[in-house]
Length: 289
Image 1 (cartoon, rainbow, N blue to C red):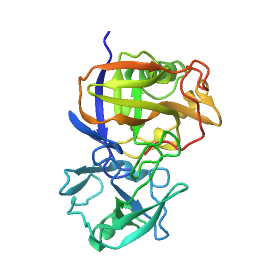
Image 2: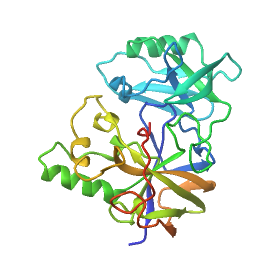
Image 3: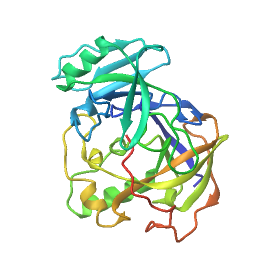
Image 4: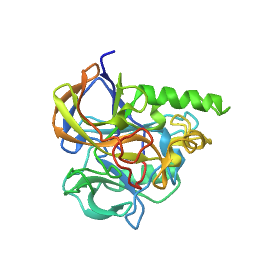
């Protein structure tokens, strides 16, 4: 079967739900508008589903002009936030894990809306400045570490089969893992076995396997937490101090992407680089949000 791109997902608000797209522009920093906005505590540290599972029900959509955030849970009686981004407001020093960066404060109305919904004092910021990846010489906005997360359809199918065999709850949807690019035709964990992929007219390089966290156990429709997939993944995908699923990647040739684009392996990964499946070297790292 010819490999192809079957999913494109952008996450305008870090920690909020994803927007499935049919087509998108791939930039050096990833898909256009990905993780452009973020919620921060008063001390500048970012908020995520790790701390507030309720963030899973946020449904942000950004068209480059207006950020609209709806709430998927009907029990939360909040009218959607419709926000025109502030471009030249107060610049705040903020932190994503151990990475210091900056964001433009988006004002009191947005801060009050999110603070009331989430039950914690926070402010909305928009990325500004420059932030580079620790490996691979890439650039990134507010994503945890890398511009892209790639997962294959067959990897999830294999995981779900293992969850069922273990008597766990499932099957789990792909949105538990919050990928940007979903591919089909590489085989189970095929993303671990390639170094460079051509997708349509673009080229991406796999940099490292993605360490997964409690966000993967969070139902993206309700915010409820369970035990899977970490319980099952820990039995066969734990190495270098983390449970791993999916590959972090950096764009090398940018351009338009569309669901259905052909996927071609330009360079295979070396077989002895850290993962059980023989993928790029593992490195302890946070799960992508």
